[in-house]
Image 1 (cartoon, rainbow over the protein chains, first blue to last red):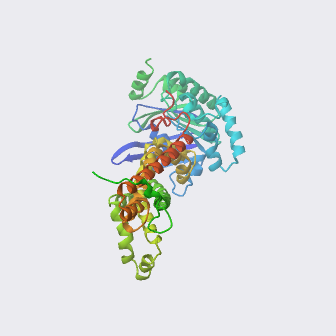
Image 2: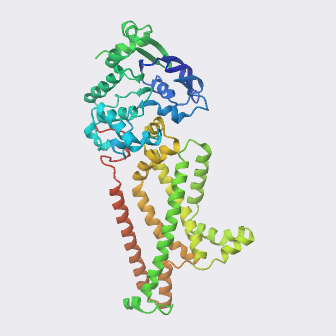
Image 3: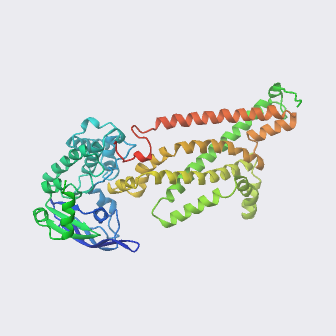
Length: 244
Length: 252
């Protein structure tokens, strides 16, 4: 059984269709990179996986739980699916440690001590132990994103969703975040990553999904995708972003 | 203009026969502050609830919130107090209406004044709370939701703490407004500071002293209120946070 199963998912904003019959699977331990031009629906697609974006047609099953079933306990499901955002979205009024522990305490009912130990363990993993008492506004973008990753990991997620995790970062900070993600991928975390970082895709992705105009145009293994993309649209896209 | 200034009047026995006129004013200030404090609590609680309702996904909550705000901010405060004081007891069932009319002074005026002022101000605070929440990047709510927080938890732990910090400056103005607006309650018989000043003027004809003293008291009280709010703003300031634009925007 795949960890994430996306079946014929369609979504409309009014009469405008943003997702068109998207179908794909993410197996346990698999790293999937989703790319495509802006407006192609890739961020929307990844947000349907934990029901941050509702959809009108199709099915999504995460670890055997049907996301679009009205009876599904969504907060419980979301707590098990880690998510990292483009703009980090740390809570500015909470210290780094409080950011790490809030959901552990409120959602997983861990004691503050347990939550702290767990949170700091992951903070150490992303190399930011010395920042534990700072506030998000006092950290660089790259540091904030690493804290955000630690925050998601503190919930012991079964899979992780990354929505353009490096596109709001200054160039010199991109690598510190990608390094953490590579480490995570190598440890066997199931990951679905919306990104334009093709270096990251080459290094750790198992499969690459290329989207355009709300459709999954290409869903291929990494080698196939970089070797011989079948669609012309994907070839053009790759030529554009690999140009430099 | 020939006017006999007589500041000594403040220490002369007032119309009640035992206290000085100054004490009459201070007594009035007591009612001003009590009415303002009670109305402020009502306004803050109701305003926060209505403001939150206007930002929730529920269509009905938003509609009720919108209706509340439009109702209470589109009727002049004076008219609202008249409605609570004169009209409400008449439209209620006779027993209830009569018991409202027979409430002993000053409660007969104090209660409608507090309710009127509280509801009026709640509409204004609801607008500010809504604006504060909407000033936050939409990703903040999403991040809370994505972590498994329920909608109420997301409001309680993620959205409202920042929204209230953002709207503290307008809330300060609202605090001062509510103190000043209590003066309207003199029209329904509450002997607050302005009414006390007026009574002093009517009995002594020392109109300048009466209202200069009242004015000075209002200014002092509001300066204290501003100072307290500023202190509070500093106390809850978020390190490294400059404004709504900086939320999640990163340090560039």
